[in-house]
Image (cartoon, rainbow, N blue to C red):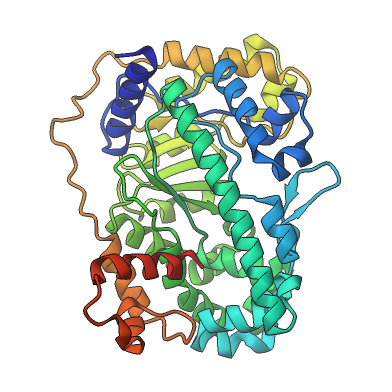
Length: 447
């Protein structure tokens, strides 16, 4: 077995124990170097790399070689060509080449009733043309725009997929299937009504906001289903708006659909990874209601309080202040790593990670990040790791079943289940349905 293969096996066992709520051989180490910061570190032009992802391999290789972590680096899901061709307003490239998400509004207050009655069709007919300006045109041009944009996206995904496979093989990373979605209230705020719009709506149309979050919930559950279920996969959900709300508003508008979403994804067999943004310390009792082994990566707060209240049920990460790497001495940075290990590592269920990823490499970041990652890898070892095969948690993969139920109830003229499609195409009678159905469904979901 090669060194890379042995390392991949070691990491696989670490994550298997972590996701099963057991004590691994050592604390898994999350990387703190973002793709954008890695591009800067390599002396490349960020905009050029986002437009030509063949240059991403150099960046990812250098991150792997110099900043040791247990999860492979990657550029995320922001494809410059795709968004440019669509005329995207929610995702734009800044003058420095970074992909940014402005505060935009794609849904008007008068759209609430239509959205509640039929969210998928309202998104297609009204909201997308407002958010993606190149779709706001005649149907012939719109079809060409969408075809070009999707081809651009798929080409970039294929390039990055091939690079990722080479990186995993060379540097010893297990294949971890990934998915992502958004909490319903955050989705309404981020893309449809904007931060300011939704904050006004909960006063003016409170019942409609609740109904809209419930209406979009099934679609966002389906969106979070990874294409290939895996014990080592996870569905990521960043939590945005909760800490900025009064608790009674959080309890009414934000929490019910988020809780239902995490419960459904967990029932589908997924590991759910929540990025708990800003200060959730006053809301910890809500998080305590989530399914066991949900991953909670905290941006801010009291790690001892979180360990005491949530550490026996959930996988905890975050808390390490990335800014300390930029401004602190090496000794200060290692002391902080030791402090978090001492608090969060005992008993397992700890994934070392930072409160955020580095945006750039100013100050002492490079030297300090290397030192911290190496320190945690060497000092985060457990004396009593569990056997990953003993009392292994049984996973019931219900993703297809739950997604099929959601699809059946979408009630959309634009989304067709295989049964609906087949009923409209009698010419497929007698053809190899097991092949055709999978392909038709794949591209229906792709859209």
